[in-house]
Length: 112
Length: 110
Image (cartoon, rainbow over all chains, first blue to last red; front, side, top):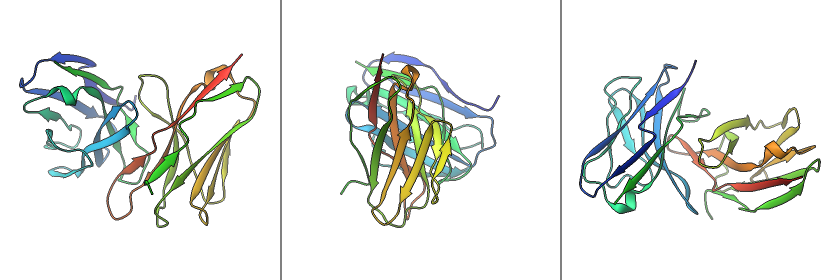
């Protein structure tokens, strides 16, 4: 089954404790992206990647890091999480930057 | 003007009715347009792409008006299961990726 898999689904952590949210796709997609979704603000892009070892900032990259060492994986790293990073996070992939995105089922992060 | 704008609603519509909502986009050079559906706390899912000549998928019709820079979604014979948030999506111009509107919340009432 074609899918984007994110883990974990739910995560509660404390300020400053480094965490990684994993994302993997099995569709051989070139393009991958991370979004966060907050009430009233909609989906905002954090980082994206056009291909292996090619990443770029989206609209809200501060406080986040990503890497694309393999085509299928695109982890999101929060080196020092803060409460304003409490949000619902989605990973997505597509054939190209202008193709329809396929989303993972989300990670709900709470930073206390 | 925001890149993609939608009326947030909510639209409260009786079951069986026809409902339509629009979305405006700011960049006339945009080429790719989509409608996504998102259920509460779930991931967005592609509902349909929007083509220049307009397109239909069952009860759903999407149209593009390039002159006025808006796309529309029409839902006929609405079902309770159509209750969701509908996201308008447009490709970025001069950069990679898609820009999402904040969504229109639709509630179908029995």
